[in-house]
Length: 75
Image (cartoon, rainbow, N blue to C red):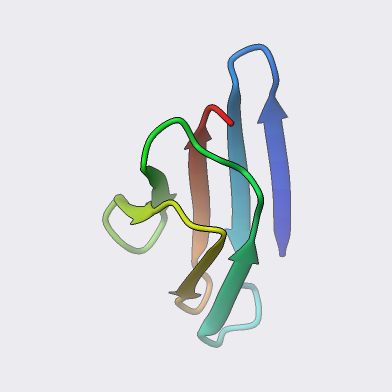
């Protein structure tokens, strides 16, 4: 499941991704956004917070029942 939340006034975007099927999931997220920084931060219910390098396509894996929020500053 995926959902995008945008705060236009604060120039921030949150991308919520969740795996509900009980199996690891491969994620490929394609965007045209240009974040203000060179990284996109993420929070997860199963792994430590971290960052991904900003790119037109992000690839990562969700663990079973993982919920992850990608935090994007600016555009």
